[in-house]
Image (cartoon, rainbow, N blue to C red; front, side):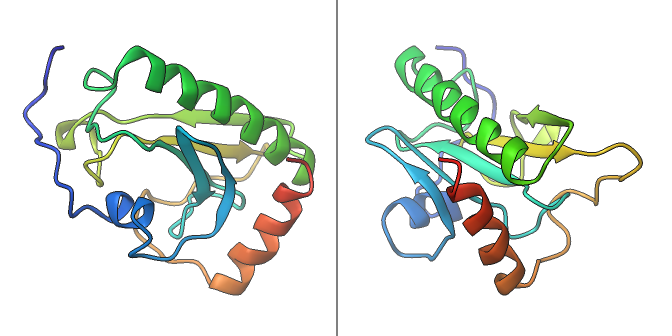
Amino acid sequence: MIKLDDAYDDGNIFAKILRGEMPNITLYEDDKTLAFMDIMPQAVGHCLVIPKQPAVTFLDLPDDASAAVMVTAKKVAAAVVKALDAPGFMLAQLNSSAAGQTVPHYHMHILPRHEGLELKFHAREPEDMAVLNETAEKIRAYL
């Protein structure tokens, strides 16, 4: 596999979440993936899908793990669109710190989109946990 410069750090926050060392607001989980709310959302309903396998970038991720992430992202995106009555959504995935990746564990962003609503800056402003939990309940109802 082709590797970019960033090395996997098993102390990253997503690795800690996978080990149960850090809390998260889980939306969906299976044997290969975990989907949860982004605590610094760029839009209401912003969530993440991660593989359970360690990898920093798309190029590091084995094919079966990348396929599993996409299957989960499709499931969760459909639930986000329904739950939030979103006319569109965006998938975003950043590879390496040079591209703006802030956590060195591969992850896919799902961002519901509504016309006229601008996105907040990436990874800057934490959301109130009560608001995140309320949004998560709406999304889970469609999973």
